[in-house]
Length: 409
Image (cartoon, rainbow, N blue to C red; front, side, top):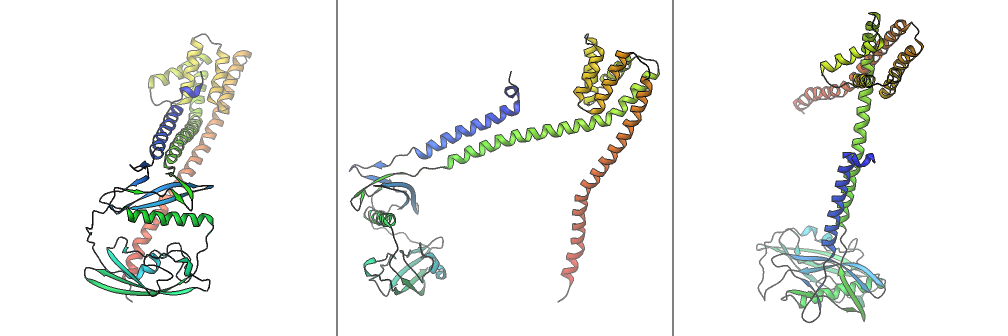
């Protein structure tokens, strides 16, 4: 059987990825399954929201060979001639930036200004007066027929009112003819038709979208919403993070087991050497160490767990020499492979000298353990440097900050 199928990490990652895919599909279909409504006159319409400041629709249009995205702003529904009272306050200094629209500054105006009638978020009402209505109307729309490349200087006067208070702000703009290609011309004309339709249907529930522009048909549809892809990306990222974190955890566990076996090896060799010197056989000494570990029933340690597994192998009829060699291979450390090979060779050859070899191995093992303990101590000291350095910064701040504030200038 494939081990990936039985691994719970891959199962969890798969569940997250599948869930993200399902959420992606649901959100994508919800966002992009809307169709433009048609009224009783077979006109395409956009719904107005009641009790709001207005609604913006992200749309896609195609006119002949032109395809583009456009934002259609539909103002809130008005009821007859009833006027909505607004809270006013004064802040006209920001007007010169707010009305720029697509222009960079007022020294070169080549597209319509946005002569707002209310400053957003402030409740300020603005009323405009111009000294030249031949090049611009009160809404900021340029009258292209009257514009020249030499530029026309126009004075804009903004009358601001708020709760009975009034202020006047005057500034100038240099107006030039707009630079437009065919695309920009068509989009500008569509926007103009949208504004006109919006004004003409103020009291209606829907705003009618224009069908043609300059004799060409306009095809409308809602803009494709791509927020569903974010769910797919987040889900895939979470699944990958689980797999990577599990792989990292396994590496850390393997490193921990390796260090633990290096620490246990001198103790195992020393016990084994003592039992052999007492006249026990290799098998008897092995069983005593393994059985003593099983009786203690403490936290699992890989070297002893593998000894118990080897003991059960031998009890089950496995060749003793091969079992010792397999023990060293399973442990994965060179010292354990050497130990298993040494016991296996002693059984096959039947030669003496096992006690001398074990004594030398015990000395080398204890020397290696001392070096390992020294290395661990150095690592621990390095890790302690970070909190000590942070404590030093805190103490330094506790001393310096009060002294700084006590200085009389």
